Amino acid sequence: MLLLATTQDRSAGWADFPTPPKLQAPARWNRRLPLSDQKNSGRWVPYAVMSDEFNGSTLDKTKWHDHNPGWKGRQPAFFSPNNVRVRDGSLQLTMRVEEPPEALRAEGYKTFSSAAVKSVGTVLYGYFEVRARPMRSHGSSAFWFYHGDEKKWTEIDVFEIGAGAPGFERKYHMNAHVFHDKTSRNHWAIGGVWLADRDLADGYRVYGLEWTKEAIKFYVDGKLVRQGPNTHWDQALTMNFDTETMPDWFGLPNPNDLPSTYHVDYVRAWKAPG
Image 1 (cartoon, rainbow, N blue to C red):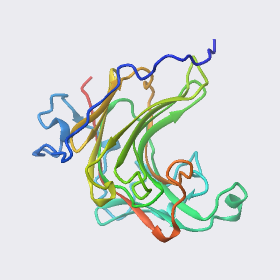
Image 2 (image 1 turned 60 degrees about the horizontal axis):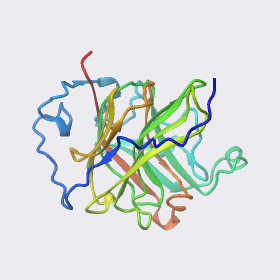
Image 3 (image 1 turned 120 degrees about the vertical axis):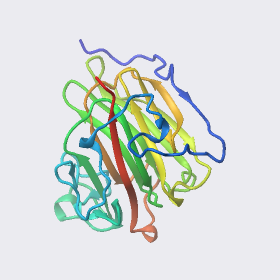
């Protein structure tokens, strides 16, 4: 039976871990392990299906779509495969001033194009780490997981960063959404913000998600910054990287700031044994 959402406090059990102004990343001596777990206490095993060093010159189509097959983009920007590149050792997703094709214009897209990369497959639980530099734009640079069907639609946003939007230059946004499930069709989310010691677009940082049956944990440069109980995120999800316009949050991009590019040096994934 479909139930209406209650007013329960869904943030129970979630905690933030502020870090010193000068966050000191742990030393990495084994690149085959997560930065936050170099002794491998989690017994992590590399998961090649969701890993990529982006060292070639083309996107690996066995792993990734150069667009989002189920979504044209967040208006007013439209996702364009032309804005997806693999070069100089990184995945590059660009936002630019560009008018859309007439068919998209009729749907409300205009002025800007953006980029999306979506995994071909899905994954349930694991440790996921990227080394990335967000673009310096009002647009969002994001790394996230989601899947939706008639029974359940959930999402985990490892980060959404508006690194060129005034007031957001140092804010690392994390979120976990439930859009609908067997008990409710009402969307709800649990979010958090970690404040960095410098502008996030100034350089690369390592961002991590530990997603298990019991908990969801977020890391920056190998340090735990937020965690909470896994109460709803138990379906296999796709992995996504994208740039989006978010006019109600970060404001519309300034055309003078574009083109601007979000760089992903690598994505590495691990699964726990069993």
